[in-house]
Length: 354
Image (tube, rainbow, N blue to C red):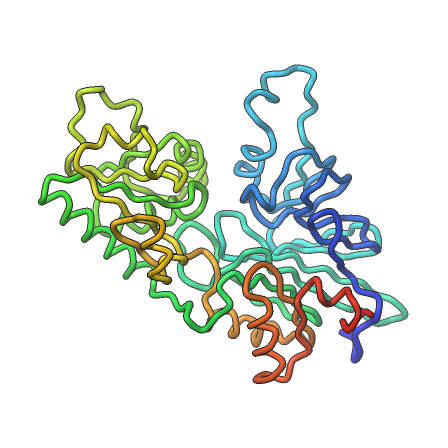
């Protein structure tokens, strides 16, 4: 690594993602590009329309599900997207840049992107975290700190109020809540994001029960893909496969947040609702959204994990994006003495590249 960071940034915002000029590629771009490096298969990071995708081998089935629709697959004239699978830690060359993907601990196949460029005998390394967490997750590889000169970190929960309990403790509470509702003859309807969070809860539930869990249709394909990847989960069944006369009392039903308060829920009779999310750490949000119960469970780093990660990678410059960037940047400058910037402000007057 160099002693001084270059004035020309190795990565900069462009087309809704990050652009590497010397490598000729984008990371998680929003608009169609020739070459995209994808951190993970959530829809705000993996979009259809790119010519070539680079992503981890473990994310391949999820990414294909995201960018290759059933309608496209049924059309003989629709070109199949070219997805180049990469092993974790495997280096590959794009243009003049050496690129590798490393575990982010966010969901199955998620990755950080390490970009290295050598010039005049010295090299500079940037790491883009993507979305990441440090807490245990039985469905994916744990976050791996990667030493770098510049660390681009997400800041979704970058405030000291955000602190997570262990996955096992939270899912134990979910199981107890299900048991209480079951004893009282009620249906338990648990809302969780359809890719990542739902499978994490299901996998952790195997520690407590082998009872069947019912699924909203939005979860079914992703649950099947996780099973295909070897993740153990309790038996599941699609809600619409149940007979119309089914009594759902005592059942646990999992669904995406978009199904909350919809007509889809009328079939469950007397039910209680809960939402599993880091946002449930804020009581006002739980109250406004109308859930009976909130379980604080996030697939993003909390405040202590965020600070620990920045220390672990040893970067001399930190660029924060997505979330509470101003609070994080101020803390890193004032308390840690780091060269820290919000990602956008790093590219305007006053930033390190001005």
